[in-house]
Length: 86
Image (cartoon, rainbow, N blue to C red; front, side):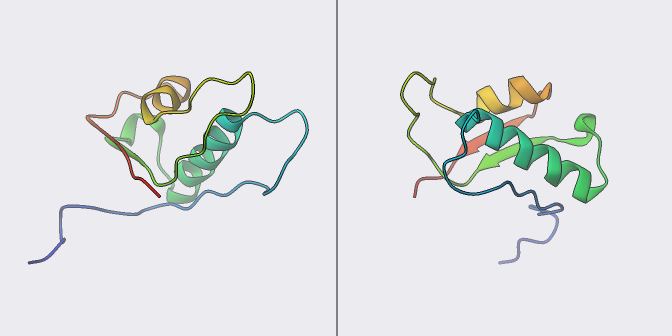
């Protein structure tokens, strides 16, 4: 079995690590996604799937960050959304 033509990792996005005042969990997800899109040389319209690898429990007073929420804030409508467990 081969994964050829099934999946592609085309960009990498990263953010600062640790507890950073004035930042929300969602802001880190959005920054990482925007960096990955830019790294891949893509436009938001090119994104057809979103897989979130890690689940981070929401901080006090924050909403749960789901792939759907990230996609919504990125302004994308991927055909595929998935959250991997850690």
